[in-house]
Image 1: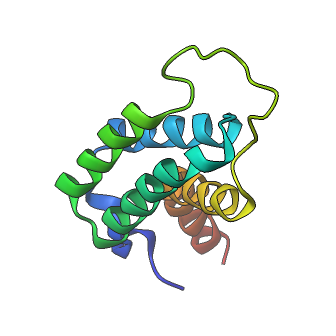
Image 2 (image 1 turned 30 degrees about the vertical axis):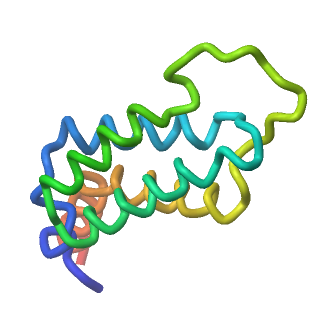
Amino acid sequence: MQSRADSPGTNLDAVLLARAGQLLQDISEGRLPQAAWSRPAAAVEALAAAYDAGDALAFQVAVARLEVLSPNRVDRIADPADVPPPEPLQERVTALVHLIAEPDKSTTGEADDTDRA
């Protein structure tokens, strides 16, 4: 198993990681017209690529892009035709939320397992 210290996103700012997690959560809870989900989906993919590459600048740019595209950024008049994120986007967001939230938990868990052995 790969050590969390060797994971790509570990060199990213904790505050920025936390904000990314919040924005991803906003996306998963949002409702938009079906055709409007392509832009947030592209922003989520850019965020994932920046995280995987450990590219702090690209990650910051992706977070800023998510800020602008967040369904909760602007109060919209509810439209009954609005839908939650498409399933592939929802799955990607859920995986990223867990990945981004794991640095402290994963390192602690590995240390705890080592201590018990």
